[in-house]
View 1 (cartoon, helix red, strand yellow):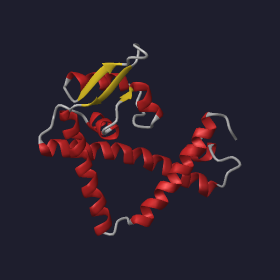
View 2 (cartoon, helix red, strand yellow; view 1 turned 180 degrees about the vertical axis):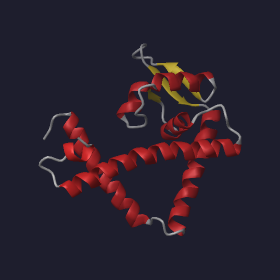
View 3 (cartoon, helix red, strand yellow; view 1 turned 60 degrees about the vertical axis):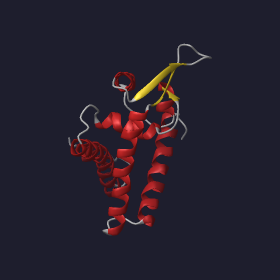
View 4 (tube, one colour; view 1 turned 90 degrees about the vertical axis):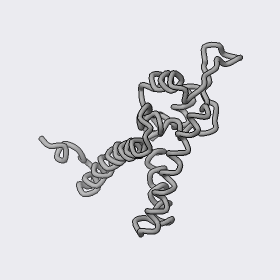
Length: 165
């Protein structure tokens, strides 16, 4: 039995096919984003950091956070956040400090080196934004429509996890 025939009982088949295509596309886009970041770092000669770590630095920005906050704020979804944070501290991209209130908790923030990486990713994204708009690939309305749709999907999935129907 194929995935298309086993799924969608009670749902419009066309909608189900489109939904599955959208899910696959989101996953492919995330992997492609990591490849784009990796290529940018190879181009500029930064080889001691991987794309996941660079994206993590970009998302943290000027904030000081704990590992737990990285997940709750949506900065990081991976299961190996501790490994990446440890590597970023070891390589001098992040600074860590024990919380004064809860000594079990460690707060992290970018070092000057980490801010340089954040700036490289920020510049890459800025160039992409300009390119998407000037080449007519996607304009402000299109981005807003995609973002709005993805936020609604995020809320729906969050409600499913919390068992709210």
